[in-house]
Image (tube, rainbow, N blue to C red):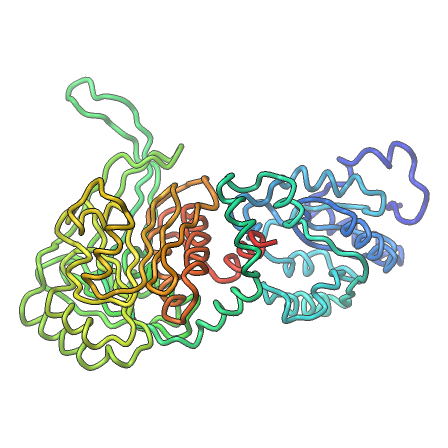
Length: 521
């Protein structure tokens, strides 16, 4: 017999480890329970910090049947941003298993409950009353969960009662974020609420966006260092595996496409090794590409050799031809920009300085764009040559501190003075300068300067983080967000982006919404 309403022995009450099962084990147990004619109830969530609201929720759920199972989200799928979960999956499972009203606990290896529901087939799937209004569900998955439980012959039930927020309790009583971020957030919460910011972000879907820039294929070749060669002055490494990402403007377009409904990408590939199929396959469905082709070059590939232990980059080999486009091809691209640029609400230029964008194109883009957002990136191939001052106007600039110092030819001057100088030179009244571990500094003529700290000091990989920052904040500025909100959103995006290996995935709306909600609880 499976434990249900019968009295528990002292051993059963306190041996919590026996209550933690794999989902496969739990599925078999549930079959036996149902064969005995007993009703199974399932709850699902993160349950990062167990509190009285959870306990009342579980007790109310238990009253809907004979056996209560609780599935929790595996650590890697807890989409609440850096710093979460505070307690790992094993500790969360043990805490739940210690509750007398909970019969079994399983860790669900996925981001949503749907697959767990289909596997376990509960008679009742129970959610808190905050999910009863579907519009309040950030994930948009409550309808999918309801469909899933009905598909296995069950029903959904919403509990009533006292509610608390684990995120709010953690923010209030635990040092989840860096000290300077906690002080900043305490002040920011007094002026802005998560729901309003999320509504603004959702409304970006109406924007038509033109994205322009250099295509880059990022390759990560993982190697283990074997040591110095005894016959030559070099280090030998053993190849382990490799993976490739859509980088450069491909990554920028994908970030934008998560928030804006219609995205048109204009870029150039090299016919000597075009990798066009790869580029097309690594774009989101709502990105419409326009590829131009140069015969004298390959598509840019940056092959990085990496020690996987700490994702340490050892060296990089670039397959690149970064001279300007041949004149006839440049003329063709310029003609295209003349026709299409003014059709878009936002033109976003991710200029990596790898030969695609020339001065005539810049003149057309600057004169034809309804709203122009620009980053001119400094990298090993163009340091000192690819400056933001190539552009004679912009509505929004997003660059890092070394890039603005190069553009201003000032290594040590006051950053605010440099910002004022560059914005006047480019007739641009909105700018954000990212500063790595020191956060960001934004400026607008109406709102002045505004500093925002980093929200996490955990870094997996910085490659692509600046592109994510630009790509999500540019639509925000185009839509008229206050610059303090833009800086907040950008730093949240940055904190998420540095946890992604290369451009393996984009910063997506739902995880960002969850992170914003967690930050502002």
